[in-house]
Length: 472
Image 1: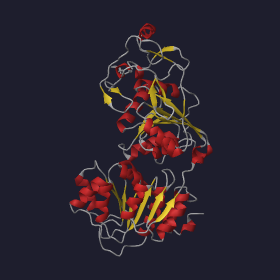
Image 2: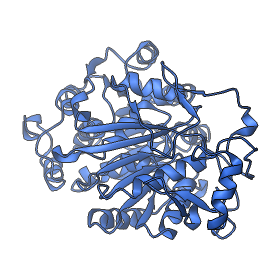
Image 3: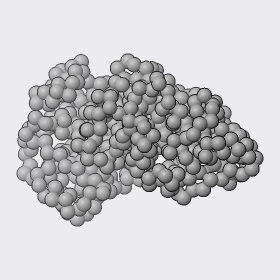
Image 4: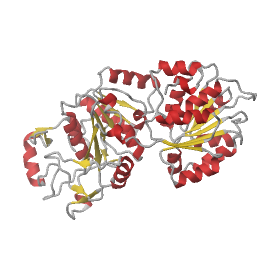
């Protein structure tokens, strides 16, 4: 099937052709005809399947014809759980609707100043993309007119439910015309989603696109259990020494962590850069161009980067922090193994990540094999059912917690494996094994020759560590 056979407006087809797309994905092929026919739709499609275009192309098709209602309010409203996803939807809308005369997109998100948002809402809006909490504020202040709203999209509705936004969503829905067309997109269509759909949708068409496990068949998935941030950093250093790693994306839990880790890797001599939602679009584009041209070997990113990056040279994806949602895991590792190439996805998991691991493995239908690097063995071992358990009854006080070196700029705090920053202190009680399996007393002796900053290289030999690892 081609996009032309879907009977979309010629100006939209022109934009699709400019973007280089030739045929619709399964979710687009199934959803677009139903939406063009005016049906409510509830669809299950994983991230990375083209679901944004599946709802946005029909929405733009509506905008190709003028509205019969005279108002400045939006004709299409898209609700998303996160700011990053809202920005992605806005960018996709601008790309597909660039030739339409009536396709002005406005984003209303938490963190944006109210005066700017008030100004945007006082002007003509065709498509409004918003996060629920901030939109409810504007509705309560009477700043939005939904009288000409024709289509409401709930994108990643399951995440909105998980994040506690459903009450806000229902308040928003109650402010919209009953004649609207409603679309619900979710990773799953289980009991809770059925209940939401029953309240908000009118006799919806149900579309379910199965997860394509074949998409992951060319990606080797590995798991490394970690004890703390020091252990994580040493494993990352080991991975980056691999000459088979041409380009990698390293995912962190927060934007701040992405910046700090990218800075540290750059200080070590890696060609590294950060990518996250707080960067301007210009800076993000510049970084992606440099990545595609091979000027960046290590991209440190948040999940916003997992949504849309298509760079054939990515050989490795490293989950420095595991994602909270299983579908984000699929999105992340799908950045490697593109265009039929093989790829490697490595995930670090601490003792707190057992639940997330089980969700990921259940979601993908694939058990991730754990690996151990000689000389960097964890002090915890996998449980049979997933997660990790201690090798002994050593108290929590004996776990490693080391500080950032004072000679690394802005690294005065210790970064824990659970993503929190706090003041740390080195604790290595006598008889307790260090990172490399030695007792504290033998470790102190072996490090004396390297100024106390020795570590094992990929061959298991003790070497002087880079500034990034000192004091860890």
